[in-house]
Structures are given as C-alpha cells and as structure tokens.
Image 1 (cartoon, rainbow, N blue to C red):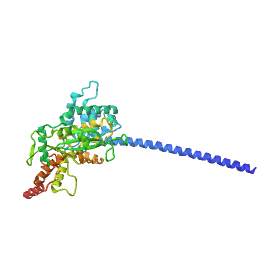
Image 2: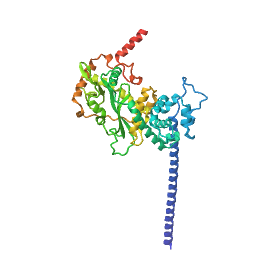
Image 3: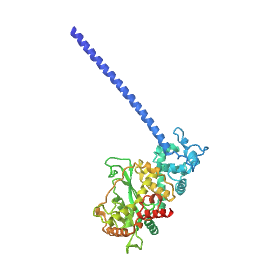
Image 4: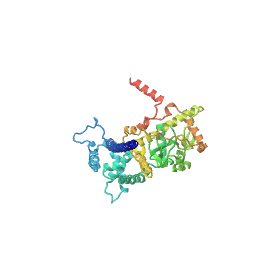
Length: 464
C-alpha cells in the first residue's frame, strides 16, 4: 500500500510539473506576442514620423534674410506641409500663389523662369483632352521626383493623386523632354560650334584643340540579383551614363542605360560618337596647325578609355616619365575638371541620380531628362546651392577601370607626343589658361599659377 501511495505522489508531481511547464510556455508565448505587437506599433510610428520629417525637410523654406524680410501677412509655407492636413491643393494654394523665387529654387532646384520655359516648350507636344491635370502640375510632379528623389507615394500625397498616376506622368513627361528638348540642348556640334568650343576651352583650361571631356557616372540602383551583370567593379548595382561636356560643363553627347558591369571603353566603342570620330567628324575640313603640324580636335579621357588620335589620356604613372610627360599629365588632369564638376552638380541638383529605385526601364529616360535639364539650368544661369552637394557627399565611390593596351591606336601616341612637347615649351603663365571667362565654380576648381600669384602681389604692392 505504501508503494502505491508513493507511485500516486510521483504521478501527481509529474502531472503538476507538466501543467506548470505548459503554463510557463503559454505565458512566455503571450509575452513574446505582446512584444512583437509593440514593436510593430513602434516601427509603424517611426515610419510615419520619418515620412513627416522627410516631407518637412524637402519643402522647408529658407530662413529670412535682410535682403528678403519676412512678411507678417504671409503665412509660413511649413503650415501647409503638415501631414495632418489635406495636401491635394498644395500646388494651387501654396506654390502658384505664395512661393517666392527662393522657394522655387529650394523645392524644385530650378528657377520659376526655367520652369515656365520648360512648360512652354513641352506644351505643344502634350495635348491630351482626356487629362484633367494641368501641364504645370504634371511637370511639377516630375521635377519633384528628379530633384528631390522623393518617393512616388509622398509626391502623390502632396499633389493629391495616386503613386501610380505619378509614375505615369514621370514616364510620359520624361519621354517628352527627351523627344522635344534633346535635339535643342544636347546635340553634335557643328564645325563652327566645335571651333568656338575649342577656342573657349583653350582660354579657360590651357589645353589646345580640345572640344570636350569624356567620362562615365555610375548611378546606384536597386539590385535584381547577386549574379546580375548590373553589379560594377566596386561591388554595388548600378547603371551607367557616359557624357561629353565642353569647357563650361554643358553636355553635348550622352549615352545611358548600360549595366554597371559595362566598362567605359565598350560603351564608347558602341556609340555614334566613336564612329563619327573615327571617320574624321571631329576634325575641321582644314585642320589647324600646332607647331607646324596639322592637328584635328581631341577629347580628353582617363585611363578607362583607349588612346586614339582624337582621344587622349595621361601617360601611365611610372618613375621613368620625362619632365615633359609629367607636365602633360598635370595639364590634362586639370583640363578634365569640367566633367568632374559637371557630374557633381548633376547629381546634386537632380538627386534621383544618387540612388534611383525606379523601374529599370524608366531609369534611362529619367537620366537623359536630368542631363537635358542640367543644360537648361546652366544655360539660364540658375543658381546652384552648395547645400545640395552636402546631401550627395556620402555617395558610393565610383569604379576606376583600365582600358587594355590592345585598344590603343598607335597613331594616337604621335598626337599625344606633339601636344606633350607643345605644353612643355609654353610659358608658365599660359599653361593653365585664363580664369576670367570660366564659370565661377569651374574657375575656382583650377589651381592658381605662380605667375598669377606674383601678379597679384605686384598689384597689392602698387595699391599700398
């Protein structure tokens, strides 16, 4: 009987232990479920808060300055951007009636005059009787997307439409910009224009017979897969735009839509520019002479491009370089400043080029539209805000590819040697050109020569 009681006690103890374990497991699961629910609420609130901050930061007006005193009768634009208020009439109620010139620049990254010019040039091509949204409002949606990289949903909330509609307008308007405005703002220069470009380039940068600088820019995009050829040599997914600019930083040739793994030389060799240059299209009918020898026009590239009679690059770095070759490398590197400055300004003004998460088929036309609008803004002397550069300062480092030596043209070495000898024998005051005709941002990028320093000292001494 005693053994049966002990057995009953053991069974009951086991039963109680089992029930206790089940109870603890239920309590633990309930606590975990409650924690997960709380975390979901926190994440949702953080998403809403970040979205509100992003909208406020994007459309925050500049602080009042002495040159533009704030008017007590004018309500603050920030009041209209509160996410708690309906924003469907933001365009009609705030932008068209209350925006000052600085508000236009801060919000759309271009002036009101350039915006109006853009709408006037697009108007004949976008007549759609079924569309009840004004052309100006559609263009504003597109400019907001290109300039601020604001997501489609936020733009739709701000302008009272759906994200799907915003995507449609971005696609349609960008295509129209490329179709209508590219022939006007980005085109192969005529022989007269090439001569003017070469003369201006020599004056500004001290490099003769040069009509442009060529380089490529990788734009970060969302990845499709780890094995995709869209990944560049730096290890991040990208699409490539290759452009040629003159000495003032205006594009006159662009190619877009290439995967990140495509090297610069391959893009160039498949272009119309390559065919045109190889057939002598970059040379005048009667080539100008340099040191007694006829010489056509040239482009300046970096190590990623093949050496050609019309495309020059620096001598490869080596302890065996002669003083003449080192001088040539210095001059060519400084003369490539326009393309470097242009790409920085392009990404800063049109921040969708910093990282573009749009559909892969839409990115090339958006990129072309940004290059065209860049030329419009530069030609209209639209102000450039340095703060935009700070917002793109954390961009991923660009790939640095090298073109294989087998692609170099042996005749290109003769052209490079001719210019090498010419630049070396120039007086120091002429090697880097003059700054008085260069755009301020490009002129400031060029180092000051010793002769310029000496001249400044002499002027100051005379004044004293």
